[in-house]
Each structure stands twice: as C-alpha cells, then as structure tokens.
Image 1 (cartoon, rainbow over the protein chains, first blue to last red):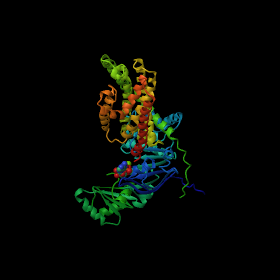
Image 2: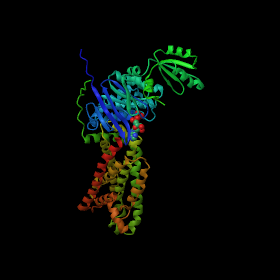
Image 3: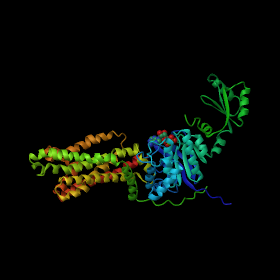
Image 4: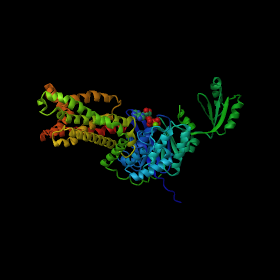
Length: 313
Length: 271
Ligand SMILES: Nc1ncnc2c1ncn2[C@@H]1O[C@H](COP(=O)(O)OP(=O)(O)O)[C@@H](O)[C@H]1O
Ligand SMILES: [Mg+2]
C-alpha cells in the first residue's frame, strides 16, 4: 500500500533570532506537517512568541533556514501571510468596532469580496458561539469571548496554517475549556495548527506532536506519549511530609531504590512503574507521609526532568 | 521524509492594492467615530474666522489695509486659516492615532499579521489622513466662499493646495510618531512646533511685521509655504514661479516623509 508522503508546511533548520546581543531563539529545527496540531511547550521567556512571529513573517530570522508553505518569509511574506491565520499572544481587537465589524475589516485585508466575508463572518461567529453578540462592542466582552473572537477572525481567510500563541493564557478554567473545545473541532476538520503554551494539559490535549522549548532551545521533541515514555515513568508517586521532616525523608527515600526522585519545596515525587508498590516500600522504611497519591506521568514531569524546573513558577 | 513543495504561493498583490486595503479599515473605523470629531474639526476654524476675521477685522480695516496688500483683514486671514486647519488636522491625525495603532487599539499589530506590509499600513493610514484633510478643507472653503472671504475663483485650487500642505505635515510626522515611546512627546510638537508656526507664518499678520532676520526662518517653514500658496490662490495674486516653489517644497517634504515612513514603520513593526 502506498502511504501518502506527509506534506511539510513549515521547515526550520538552525532557526535563530537575536535581539541585539540577546539570543531569544537559538538554532532550532522542526517540521510542521499538513493536518497536524504541533505544539511549543515551554515556560515564559523560552522563545515561543519569537518563533511564532518568525513563522508569521513579521519578524525576520537572524539566521538559519525557514520555509513556510514553500516560500521564504522575507521575500514571500505577503503571499505567505495571506494563507496564515494568526492568534497573537495579546488580543489585537479594535474596541471601537463591533464584534462583527472586527471580522469584516480584517477580511478586507486579505482582499476577499465583501459578500464572502459577510457569509464567513456569520459562520465563524456561530462557530465560536458569539452570534448573539455580533452587534455588540468588543470592549465589554469577557476575556474568553475576546479570545474566541480573535480565533474567529484568524479563520476569516480560511488559512492553511493556524498559529495560536498561548490561546488560553489568562482565561478562567471554564473559558479555557470552551476554547479547547473549539480548537479540537478545528483539528478534527483537518486544520493545521501550531500552538504555544505553558500549560502541560493544553499541550497533552491538543497536540499531536510537540517540542519542549526552554531557554531559546528545543530540549526534546515527539508525541506527548513518546515524550512521557522517553523522559518519565508510567506512574508518579507524590508524597508530602511535615516540613520539619521533609528533607530527612527525601534523603531516606533516595537511599531506597534506583528510581528517579524529584524533591520540590513542598513534595517528593518518585518516578516509578508501579506507584502503589513504591508506596509500600516507602512505608517499609518506617516513613509515614502526611499525604500520598499515585498519578500518571504528565508533560510537566517531562519538563522537570529535562530542565530541572517547573513550567509555571 | 520527503519534502513535497505545497502548491505554489499565489502572486502577491501590488502596493496600491495593499494600500487601499489598509485605507478601507480606517474608513470603517471613521464611519463609527466621526460624530465625536466632526465638531472640533469644523467649529474651531469657523470660530477663528468669525472672531478674528470679522471682529478683529473691523478694527484692522479701519486703520488701513496697505500692509495687507490692500485687501480686507477677513480676506487676508481666511486662506491662512484654511492652511492652519490643514496643518492641525494633519498633525492631529498623524500623532496619537498612529501611536495608538501600535499601543492602544493595535490596529497596526492586527494588520501586520495579514498580507499588508508595514509600508502598506503606513500609506493606507496616510491616505486616510489625507482624505480627512481634504474633507475639512472642502467644508472650510465652502464657508469661505459663502462669507465672501475669497476674492478669486482660483480659490477652488485651495483644496488641492491645502491638502498638499496637510500631506507635507502628515507624512513625516506619521513616520516619526510610529517610533515614539511615550505619547507625551506629542505635546512638544503641539506646543513648540505647531504653535509658533501658527503664529509666525504670515497667518494673522504679514511677515513685514517681523524682524528681518526672522524672514528666512519663516520662508523655510512648511506652513508659510502653504499659507502663501493658499493666499495667492484666494486673492488671485499667485505667480507661476511662486506656485512652483511652494508646490515643489511641499511635494518634496511629502515625498521625504513617505520614504521615511516605509522605513520607520518596518523598523517598528518587524522586530
Ligand atoms: N523585541 C524584543 N527585544 C528584546 N528582547 C525580546 C524582544 N522580544 C522578546 N524578547 C526576549 O526574548 C525572550 C523570549 O521571548 P518570547 O519569545 O516572548 O518568549 P515566550 O513567548 O516563550 O514567553 C525573552 O527573554 C524576551 O524578553
Ligand atoms: Mg510568548
């Protein structure tokens, strides 16, 4: 059987961005394939937005190779941007206009006929569940609604690639779930997504593949499952002890076995195959934790393993 | 893994097409907000014309108008106010609105994610500002004619003249405004730029009242060039050579501003 060769939409090799002497993106490599949802997971300052801006053709790379939809971002910026949808980290809605007008104005930037934009605007407002707010001003909308409107706007030109820079940062949990649900639907429709996030649950839920980015570099790449298998264990046993015995307990557990252990300020994590069995062994040494629980490994554990730090401080 | 090139990118639209796309956005925004600016932009010049042209004018005229070239103070003043209004509209539209498009409502930031390039964003906004200047000038010219404040039918050419004058301000100031970090910088332009220009460019009194050493300074300012152009047209006294100098000066300043704007916008938006 013939397998279709995946179509590369974005290709980066040694991609670098410097601001003066400061290197924000330090020689990263990645490929984006048509139809996938590709994530950049990393903490604040990792260089995610700088990378998104280079892909969005609004920030010329300092060095390295970057090809987007077969074109060069500097030479072919106009044509490439015409086929991208961009949700920037900060909302860029015009608060003097209504919800619907924001879509209409934006669609005109792409040279689309008025009638087509009007049709799409209606469909997109429906899609992001803002139809009943179509004629209201943008200003009084909630953060989640504004974010959905930016997403709707980014789709007005029916883009080949949708770039989302921290789509749910700053939203409350409920609003985040609404956004996730919409993005999940786009994914199912086959829209190619690039997204950045510092939420490991967002990356796990939405991304087919992702890179872990830290301090301007890519620390690891793969599917969420591959990354967890490669850099973490199937289960994690989390233990809490009283503050006065916390350090002593950590030392004692370290002597216990060969598994990896991470001790943070308030808890001790054991990366193990079987969490319940590990807890028995801990108890066998006479230690009695105040609290304990067993959970599956997450991308947060991967990040901790790779960088020694947590995603969100 | 094979790199199969995606369907070739469509050819990019031309600069003019992209400029018009940028302009359209401003027209939509203006349709929403014109009510709040309409009075200040028309009423101010009318008050000047009324109070100074008629009020002060009756006093001036009774002392003889030889220094004014033998015309009534109203007719002397009106074309200057046309020019001042063009300058004020230009400066007003190309300072805070430009700055705010980066910092506040982020119109530029939204637009730059679209096919528009920084130069298109600049030119579209400038074109809109030029249309606003033309609109305000047209209304003022109608009022001028209605009050008999123009002597020559050439005054209709005051519309392109005042618009060009406005462009000569709007183009370089917009190019600079996009680089500004604090909006308060604009107060210097208003206070130490616009204000002296407004007072000493043969606007309210003829240049012959200024000390001689100041004359070259006055001649070098864009507002004086614009006032001289508008007054020459309104009074029917403009010579072809004077017209060429004024128009050439203002066109050169506009061209310089447009050239700079493409660069400053790129530097500001493409970091
Ligand atoms: N225009 C700029 N000038 C100077 N430094 C910048 C600029 N933009 C970003 N940086 C710096 O580059 C680093 C990476 O920033 P960014 O790409 O925004 O990271 P992230 O999106 O992952 O939080 C940060 O340290 C930031 O301060
Ligand atoms: Mg960022």
